[in-house]
Image (tube, rainbow, N blue to C red):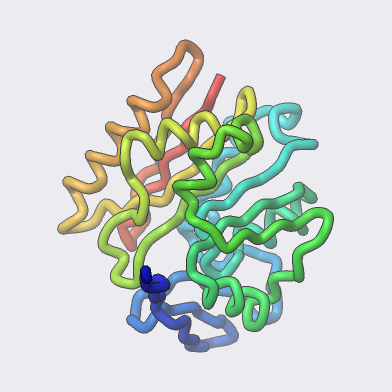
Length: 219
């Protein structure tokens, strides 16, 4: 008999009106300003909206936004509430989903919101999901925040297939000391996945915490 996977339990902290999500460590997995639950609080997550400067409105309006990794649901709530896009959020840790609903103002699933407790790699590889995402956000780290939870060449190729024509994939990567090899490996794999004519890959300068945002566009 196979054992059920175990996951770190979510914990909370609050400071100056901001609630933070942790997974049993000091690393912040997501944040929400309690007075403005549908706004994006963390700077690196705000940077993950830079795709809007690169995509024409017609490429994403009327499409679906997909998030691989839920965290405190900041992106999911913003895409649904502010941009009014249907959202599909995929999260493996059921405790994170519960925390997002209970403590981070994520609405219950409905016509415009689907929350799947599932493996993001399996979701991305499922042929029935091909072309589903106009905008795909990838932000998945374990409780130690050491490396992306999924980073294989096959995974990034699957992410490209998830995108609709002229869709965008946005990935959060770490660039600080100790992360250089992981960063370079992931950037090379993203470049290899988005190598078709008309594709392009952009990267924003790292912020002061070392978050580097990569944006890959599918023609």
